[in-house]
Image 1 (cartoon, one colour):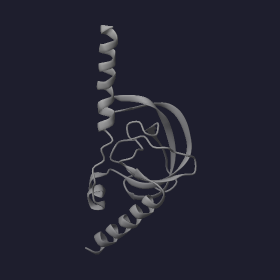
Image 2 (cartoon, rainbow, N blue to C red):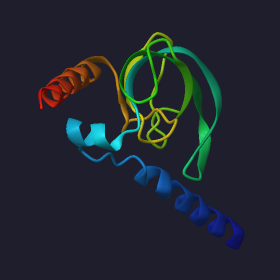
Image 3 (cartoon, rainbow, N blue to C red):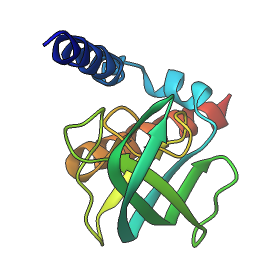
Image 4 (spheres, rainbow, N blue to C red):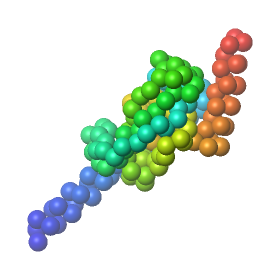
Amino acid sequence: MWIRFVCAIASLIAIVPAADACKCSQRTVEGRFHESDSIFTAEVIATAPGVITLYGFEGPGYRVYLRVVRSFKGPYRPGDKDVYGTFKAGQSCGIPVVVGQQFLVYGDRGWFLGMCNSSTGEQMNAGIAKLDAFLARRARR
């Protein structure tokens, strides 16, 4: 009985960091640009199930194989390929991914693709428009 209680408490403690990890801060495009090592759009070309480790948390997820479509900042160029990881959707900021899907990625969380550093669909398009406007203003200075 005592062992079950200790195991239950330990499992709850293990979940807390994962839940906290998904509290995304609201940042401006300018802030994200300065904080990110790389910013790019990419297409998912393949996925594979795997175990993902991030900041000491390990869980089921996917390796996400990306092909860069456009680079806004950093070392990536169109056509470059890289492997990112994500936890299963709903777990520690994990997101659903499908082959052919495109993402706007802010490379400020290592090689992790998640809720706080990526967007797709209309949110991605809005982010690209904001980045283009920011970069145009910056170029005029």
